Amino acid sequence: MTLPEAYITQVQHIQESSKFQPHLEQTRQAVPFPGYTVITPPREDETDNSTFYAHLEAYQQELLQLSLNSNWIVLVPPASFHLTLADLIWDSAYRDACQNNPQFEEQLHSCFAEIFQQYQQQSKRWQTHPIEWHMQGLIVMPRAIGVCLVPQNEACYEQIVSLRRVIYQNSKLMALGIEQHYHFTAHVTLGYFGEIPAHLDRDRLATILSQLNQQWTENSPLLTVHRAELRKFDDMTRYYRQPDWPSLDFSPQQ
Image 1 (cartoon, one colour):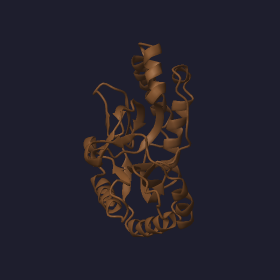
Image 2 (cartoon, one colour):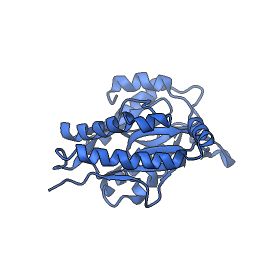
Image 3 (tube, rainbow, N blue to C red):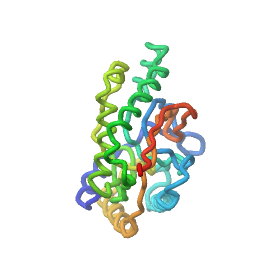
Image 4 (cartoon, helix red, strand yellow):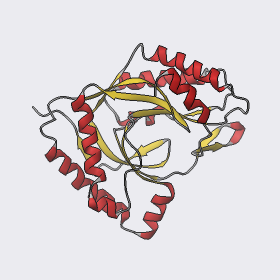
């Protein structure tokens, strides 16, 4: 996904994201898109990984400098940077779940208290080293752009995949209507596509992105996954939780 050939293919299919709509003075504003997710603590609540996120913020600014129209990309707030570990439920599916089941959110929280505890018991054999992922390069998705990550070793990968397995195979969670929608592509989103120019030279854009990627991968920052948290969002700009909501600590055991 980070090879020049991939960019050539991917830029042919980029399109405007519906998660941000035109607002005053041609700026774009996040629209309501509520739901729940399991992520690493966002940058605003993260005491570690400051170097990693500083690099990503600098990368964002480089995207803004590309010679396209000024509205081609909507950057997410750097404070919201995070790694998604498991997508759960969002938008109409979330609204319907809450409407049909007044106890939905309470039951969801209860499920994750059990899920995280179950994972903690199963994963003791792994918890001797930190979970580290390093930036592989730029990734172009149909409606967004970001950087993708690769694990430092097999154990780092297996711990995350095993957590996802425990989540998506939980019968109580399935009963709440939550199921796995995507394979795991570890990435941090930098922005969403805004107004795509009508006569966009897509081959040229692919070349520019490939050149950017080469610059960025010369300095491949490292993300250490310390925690997984159940978080709620109202749109794609902020992910929040209450202090008593379930979380999972990945700190290595001595």
